[in-house]
Amino acid sequence: MSQDIKPDVELPSDTVLANRGKKGPFILIIDDEPDICRLLQLSLVKHGYSVKYVHALTEGMQYLQQHQQPDILFLDIHLPDGSGLEAIPDIKMKCPALPVITISAYDNGMEKQKALKAGASYFLAKPFNVKNLDELMSIMLSKK
Image (cartoon, rainbow, N blue to C red):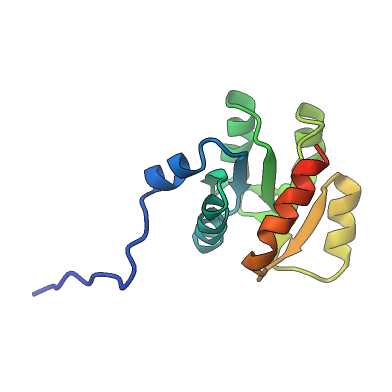
């Protein structure tokens, strides 16, 4: 006999999360790790941002072509279907003013240099401190 286990904390649905920040800036996250996406989404929505995430580079690139340009893009460098690092020049050609925040578990200095040289606005190493996100968002939005 299976038992339904209820979480201690009820998480809001994706619809609720997407709608809560509707009036604030729109953030797109391209990362293959669901936990990172949810952590960023929960943290950003709490500060009034509207957030959408996708788990593949091809899906993210399609989204950028077919929908509104986000105010900020979080882009994982290592994705299963391609390199976020190699996609930055194409993204910047299509959306020159879009701040791109690269995120990676590989923080060896070289990755950061490559990302910034490719056109990223900021390099965020995993794991990161969500307490600093609001300040980072303010800085990125003020540069637009």
